Image: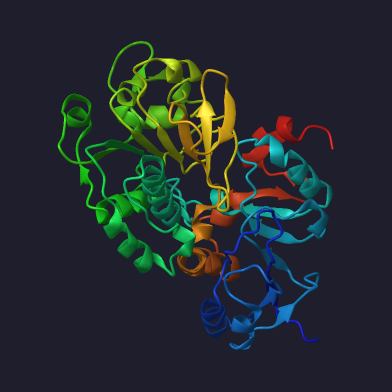
Amino acid sequence: MQKSRLTIGLLREGKVPPDKRVPFTPLQVEEIHQRFPDVKIVCQSSDVRAFRDEEYKERGIEVWNDMSECDVLMGIKEVPINNLISNKTYLFFSHTLKKQPYNRKLLQEILRRKITLIDYEALKDHHGNRLVAFGRFAGIVGAYNALWTYGRRSNLFSIRRAHECFDINDLKRELRKVQLPSIKIILTGAGRVARGAMETLDTASIRKVNAYDFLTREFDEPVYVQLSSADYHVRKEGGGNFNRDEFHRRPELYASTFKAFTTVADVLIAGAYWNPKAPVLFTRRDMQEPDFKLNIIADITCDINGSIPSTKRASTIIDPLYDYDPVTDEVKPGLSDEKLVTVMAIDNLPCELPRGASEEFGRDLIDRFLPRLIIEDKEGVIERATVTADGQLTEQFRYLEDYVGEL
């Protein structure tokens, strides 16, 4: 078998529940082969992904089972520990950069096997902007699921699940069925996730209002507010206005005023990145107060035990909802008690529209990552996104040393 200068393998997703997304669609692989003739992309056989093996084969792309001959291995979600191949370069979302406890053993094994790990989440330009992400589709589906949940909880309307829609256009047509009373919806964030969520809310003809009016006025129609960090944080000491740069560097200097919004809103769609050093949005004690009004929380960020106390675990596409009791701190079956808060915390939302999400993600990879990998990376983007190399954490990720501990 003749080997190209660089062989890239598209991994079969092994995490449970299975993820249907891929780094590159068959058409995109064909494009890559045309643009970069010294690169060969092969696909690991899978009966899970949204694009069937035959769709790759039809475009002349080889489908393998054994990926040990590949130089670079690209997946989406975490690679199961038993599937890791030593001394390879991997790209996937490792979900270790916030010291997530459930992936500690994965990062330890990556170090033991001297794997070079490049995390998609860390691929950023010099301004800190992410170059590749599924954020838009996470926002689109997350907000859609919030509306679907409201329909289920209120019995006022019924729409299909997002994954039952053929594509994004089919999903947007379904939104015409949404009939909301004069509720108030909070959307947090200003990035790709929030922009995707706004696509859904705007398509559903929900009016956007500013934070002051949201807090002080009553409306005779459903409305939503988009909140950035400046809208619900104040400096703890010394006064002064909210300073965005300082907040990103030293979020512990600020306190949350988000509780004011929970007393007037019915639904929260959480799409803002949360730094563990930053204050939480609200506490379990806040949720027990009589004036806490939120009864549906769609946590797109899905930071377990993070900024939202009701996000006790991730939910799944098959079982998307659970109820949370702030008095007992217990999780109960979804829609079981109208006195409880209903939570949607699916951690792989773009997987509900996997073909469209993969196409957009692959486009970003082709335009913003591959030339840096194959030709030249003048700005050091890949170096800054490399978490491990030669059995060691790289300089910018040394803060994970206490997380991985003794190997």
